[in-house]
Length: 468
Image (spheres, rainbow, N blue to C red):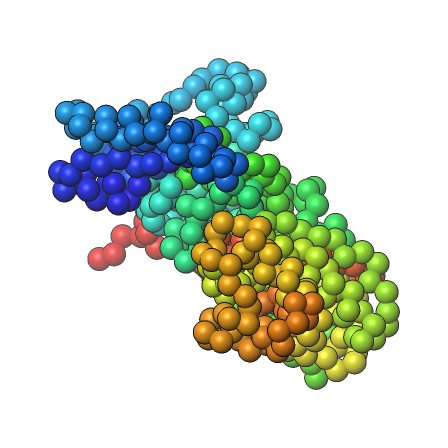
């Protein structure tokens, strides 16, 4: 699409060839980038589910005509005309039931009841923050809409967020605006959804739960911020089924995962156990919000054992089981960008610390044990996907310097190889019931929502302060 828009901007006719299921997304992308009605040529059906003969027949019968028409039509492509309500427009009035029904009909709601974002409520949400409501933090690469403080507040009111959570929401919006995160991929077909992780000394005071039932709805701060993200992705970034959300199944909105920083600090004075935020480069004293998109998660229940030697094989097995198609992000679709997260309960973290194991030791042992047969790995990145060019063997990739030598210690197809390239690629966080021996493994979606973190600034902004 971007190549077509560059051509059209230079006065050169273009046609973008898209699969049938992505025609709506292509039109929305063109509109978000400033062009409406960009010519499309649609291929019939799904390319992976057709033989070469079927695809060729369909292409000649349908797609070629679209290409010819798009290149020869005299109609020029106009810049998109914005017909949606402006920030201060009254989109609907009436009872709370009527407002909810209208928002559902317009696709502006997640389907649950919400608080109507009246101008007064939004202004009260921002009162005292010092932020200029019209300050722009960036532009959504998917919809072309500005990411403003006002739009953050509108969706925060809808989600029921408290005003003191605004700095966290601003941090999350900065992540969405960061090209390193890649928010434009938030609706890809595998249905990966964002996991928000919160670290820092102020998390507990703001009401975030890091203990029993972590990741379950019900605690207001965790739940409302998770809901805000889903609403913001819909209403500002355009991730609805009519526009950019092409998830085959999708995941429910995830409440914020607050890491148990107090447990981390009390593990042991002699053991180095950094929080997730520290693993991503921040200081222990910082309040930090981090986010990555996760394809799937796996409960690792009732981890049995009283020593690191006993519990690590089970945890490693969970990491290996949750990794599958995601391994294309080790090589191919985002080389060296598979970075799964293992969330362990404080009890398991103390088991390591009591034995003198710091995080580096845990990661090294998990790296040694979280392995799968080389032949299985090669099927994931080659035979069972069309996303990696060729059908290369791991030993060939290692010989070419693309993968480390640990992937080519022999030519035995049944040899065990790691699921990541380096031990530090296995991120570890601590949360959950402090008296239970459970863990949870998440598989991330590589560059389609890469691990990105922002420091949270709780001090009032000076945007609205007059300077003499």
